[in-house]
Each structure stands twice: as structure tokens, then as C-alpha cells.
Image 1 (cartoon, rainbow, N blue to C red):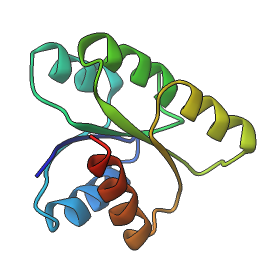
Image 2 (cartoon, rainbow, N blue to C red):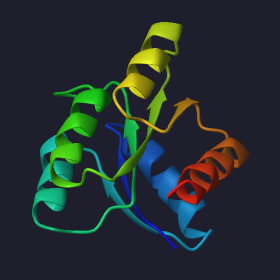
Image 3 (cartoon, rainbow, N blue to C red):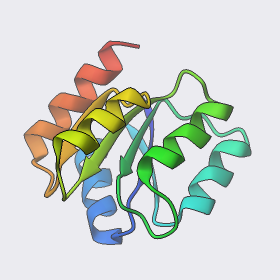
Image 4 (cartoon, rainbow, N blue to C red):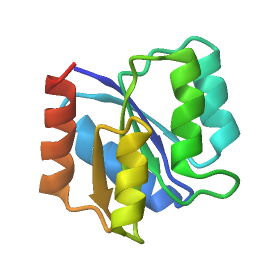
Length: 121
């Protein structure tokens, strides 16, 4: 199964994603702070998939994705947002996100998108 990093400034949302994905056998690390998530990657911890909220406290999820790609060029990402627009979806996909999810997260949609993205690896 996959090593998944979840970054959301709302801890309850991140924990919910963790619970959903751990039931599918994935190892999930949850972060609510961009700096801690990036440090985790810089320290050499493996990450196959990053699930990133678009609106964070200090950075945009797309900025975090750009930083992650410096250390893990092959990392796959799903960007989540509670404020979906064509522009944000396009921006996320252009910056290398493999998928885009609208919050609140639907369990089945999340499971399906994670399976699709991981299958492309």
C-alpha cells in the first residue's frame, strides 16, 4: 500500500481522511502545519501521495506541492478545496496535481481518486 501525507489546516478533516485511507491499508501521516509537513519530506521520509488542502494557514496547497516536488519529483498529489472554481482546478492540475477534490470530502470519491492516482504510478 502507499505512504500518504495529508496536509489540512483543519485537524478534524485531516484525521477523517486518515481514518478512511488507513481502512484501505495505507500508511497516513497527518499534518496541520505546512512547515512540519515539508520537514517530514526533507528528512527523507517516503511519500507516494500528498493530499493537500488548497487554502492553508501560510501557503497555498499548490505552493506546498511545488516544494514537495523539489525533494520528491515523482510524488503524486490530490488538491482539496472547499472553494472550487475552474481556475483553481486548472491551476492545481497545471502545477502537477493528479486530481482535484471538493470538500466536504465524500468517502467514496476520496477512495476512488486515491486508487486512480496510485494506479497511475
